[in-house]
Length: 64
Length: 268
Image (tube, rainbow over the protein chains, first blue to last red):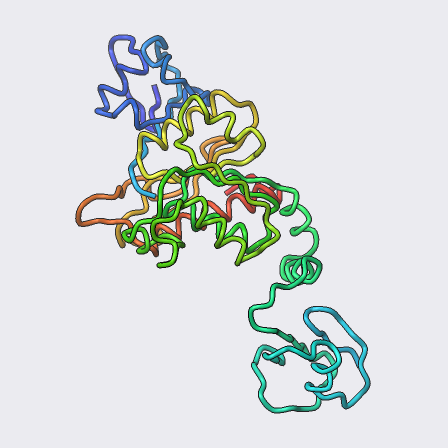
């Protein structure tokens, strides 16, 4: 799959939640877009990613 | 000959002097500006001179102020701005600066939301003044906007935004500014707006702490409804605090993206 423009290969099928864990990202501080659709946090553990998916993860940092 | 007096064109007789014009158009003006310079001594006017007459502290009439704004923004821009309502979630370094810029250009309406009060530590980057310390940020910002452009409609909501009230708070605006401090709140607001509304646009910000290069702060278009501003890296932490220059650069990226969206320029 393509994550933020980079090719990443995982042997097993993973959910959005698994992907965030693998990338060491905090689920509460990101916005995830899969094939241009924003995914609700409630669905992170249900949605299985496919190898042709294009995923954008916006990882917010604090300050404003 | 034609001269401009307070941004309006008038025909006056040749050899009219500056003070004659003042006495005729605004006798009580205590500041007289000719072609951009404050003038103390009377002089003869020339064709196309620009005269601005000001009485200190006087609030211009709505018609006069509107005319002044239109002449700076061209009517097409101003007409569109005047019809637009923008919501601002958080009135800290980002939100207070976005609110000030949008007010200066003549936005129609702002919906300002914050639950916080102005603290001394806010003065290093937020628009507030010493006299606002201890005031609700919503009240203080409204007071400042009234002094910048009294004809902006300002609705204030002294509330902590949650997933349960966010849609109601912003139900009457098309564009929302994400101007929170915490990463969690930023992510949650963006996610709520994009997943629970059909056509609202959100302009968010992430990464503007410290004194890193100004040029690393960028506007990114994530989708038609989601724009992201910042360097996406530099969070507020010890040794790299939030400071006025980069925070207001990011805030004005947000304000300019909003202006572009209102002018139907969807690209970055």
